[in-house]
Figure 1 (cartoon, one colour):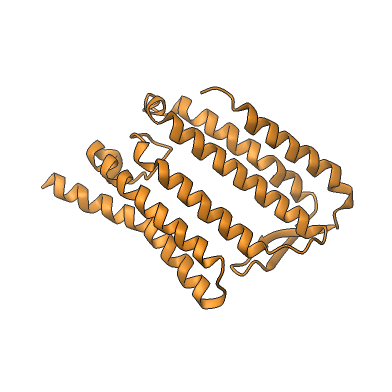
Figure 2 (cartoon, rainbow, N blue to C red):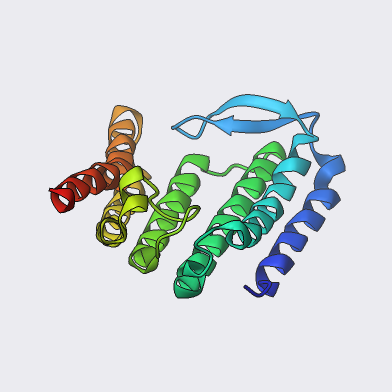
Length: 210
């Protein structure tokens, strides 16, 4: 796969911006937020260097993995899905980096809403391309049953496209709730998007194997 010049430029701009504001950051910066968007852990400000480099590391990892996958030919078949997923994940990580920096600098932003909107969009975008993903060892819903049977893989990923879409919409809805309701909605989204496809792959495999 070719290098995504746009992503490299955005990563470089983010890193440059991080170094430019580094001296203005307090000694401790947020490193974790709870479900309500409240800071529940701080780290030394040097941690923003790692979170700033993280998008680049993820990008390079996703460039490297297809080269060592025994089913590397599958990446040619789902090239668009892989490229879009790579892009949306890197953009999400860049967004998180600048949320950390802006909060550390004292900007009054609603972390909870921004993060949930970001995750919801992430789920929806990935779900839109799930059905295109072909059998491989690094990308997609990898269970013993999807890896053992290509038909199970295809059926599971078609279903996963729908469950990720529903999960993403639920997460978007949870952006405007708080407390126990927000927690329940997030748990429901995770169960629908991630757990249901795993159970579904097992059920389909058993039916095919009978």
